[in-house]
Image 1 (cartoon, rainbow, N blue to C red):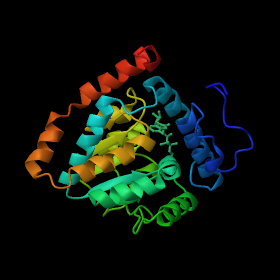
Image 2 (cartoon, protein in one colour):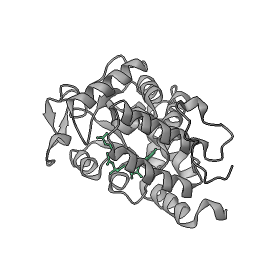
Image 3 (cartoon, rainbow, N blue to C red):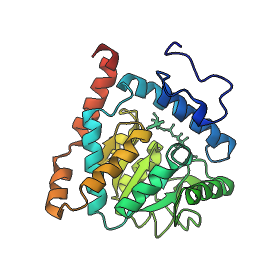
Image 4 (cartoon, rainbow, N blue to C red):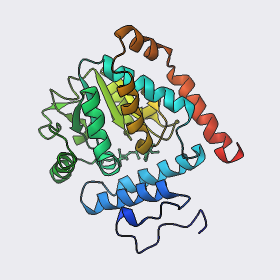
Length: 261
Ligand code: PTJ
């Protein structure tokens, strides 16, 4: 099988994707997005987002590069220092890492809030149900009784006691306008995005340039590792992390191409 072969057409379930396929992870994420669309969780535009992410991931070597691991540790420390952290969940996040995002929220004591670019009541409900089915005890974003200032349309809608009141927000695969609106509100933002040139990671305090399927479990692992760290140690980790350096390292890796390493 060549590395450019795609999943065989007869694959109906993720388990049927051969684990020895050289692009196994990519095939799994593609399959999960496709399933997400079929279940009404993921928007069709989520497929475009997935395609873009997949291309960047290919150039990164489909691995967590050292600067991303540092960002993931800084994200864990940021969460543990927060008073009111929230993990924002959109249709791609719900399809790709439902169990893992529920686990992260549990470990760092964060709220989960469904927050959609293409907001419809049906998708909000489908995503909330999907998170409940994967162990979530509480999901915000259904009421959406507040608005982010300086942002048009339904994508500004958030929960007043969720993202609106949060001090730290994790926004994976986020649209640039909303990431900017959150930054303008003074939130500490953790962004997961495979494109280091995208506006969202560029406005983030902690940009994580890594595939969400690797990033979320790794932030959780760092948070578990730091569970007994005192405030001074957590603050030192956050202060030592430089977002510009992390973005430059990711861009350099993508431009150079892992295949030349
Ligand atoms: O569910 P909704 O309605 O909220 O819509 C979600 C999408 C993702 C469709 C919406 O927010 C959107 O259009 O986002 P963009 O502007 O396409 O940005 C998505 C970013 O995520 C792009 O920079 C991709 O490179 C990146 N990305 C895609 N897949 C992954 C990823 N980053 C990390 N891990 C991935 N698996």
